[in-house]
Image 1 (cartoon, helix red, strand yellow):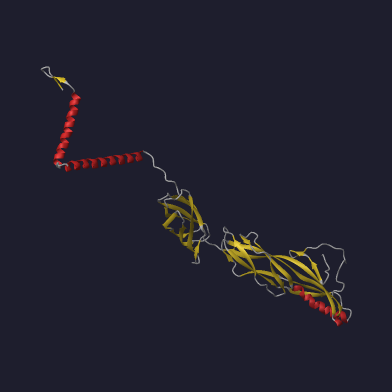
Image 2 (tube, helix red, strand yellow):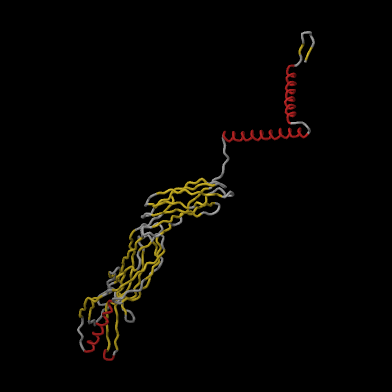
Length: 388
């Protein structure tokens, strides 16, 4: 072992993981020349987690650690026999001081996550000095549970370091109360475990999105929700939070009870502003449900892309005939109104509607005759005369 005589009254012996880590030194380099007793005692540290040890995914919370000292004296062994009355008094003082071996001095606790799905945000905390039977105040360690943490029980490591009194040496004149003492301390590093529980719960993600959205039109967005958690989500309801240029009066969908790994499709009616730019817009979705204890829970916000598409001109023969029919209809309507105006004009000049009809038919016949005559051309009669 490595012994170091300190300038005042303290000696320190280094120990790691409760095992002595010491170097060999030449014999008789330093020792207590008059040691009346050897005590068999040390602190016995118990570490526990106090309060609620259950945490939720994506939770920011506090882990409370308490340190208790259950140190005890197992026995004494006499070393040097006192030689006179002064040494008898000194031996009594030494024996009384030896009981300090059960006190843990300068206890420091450092919480480590190791393989647990969480982060420790607080550095090492001091628990002070603990005599046998004493319990520290709860040491607070802030934690953040990972969002994708799997439910289960996980160990956390508590790294403890402290010192305790290994041996005592006293000398001086007891009758005049002129006494000096020297203490040998041993340094200890220990690893303890406490356990935390990541609670089972339902959790959701959107695994498929389909949409038909165009500027200035009403459309639909279809989402497939999957329960990726470990528990059933009872009476689950999906709801959307929309922002310009998207809006809706139908932003909720009832999913019913959703078992773990079950997929449920929900369709929402969405209105798109006329001046919306064709591109992808984020939609915020969340699922409200009841857990196994009947408490209402809301999932984390799920960001879903909604694609507003560009309106394209329709092509093909159907479009051609539609346009042709519309054109013919416009020409017919225009002819009807022009003909009606012509008749109304002649009536105003004094003729009746019947006369106008006869005149129209006559003029039509004359026009037809003239055209027929022109078509026949000139000919020669039986008497040799020409006609036209």
